[in-house]
Length: 112
Image 1 (cartoon, rainbow, N blue to C red):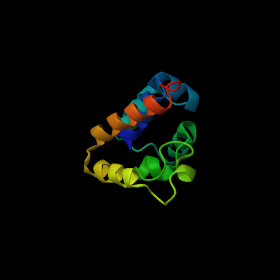
Image 2: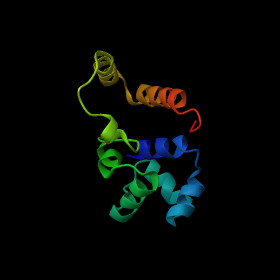
Image 3: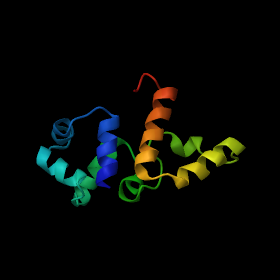
Image 4: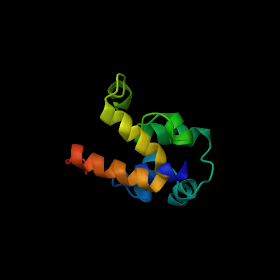
């Protein structure tokens, strides 16, 4: 979960200080959570709301990591989409984050 939180923060161009201020916790607490410490349930929920991601995505890496994914990811799938899923499942976490960053910059250049 810590790595996902760190990636969400970086993807949004935020510092730990900014996240800590928004959630009214210390920067060192955000650091510890990003390193794998248990945030506690209240902060866990706050983080999911702050980053606008499902709790299941934060906790297990399951679910939509971005708004709108649930409605845009419905079957039927094209051959290309299925090929991407197959390749995705062969990647490690670092490779996945790199691919997501590249795709997001290509599709949403104003966000990058």
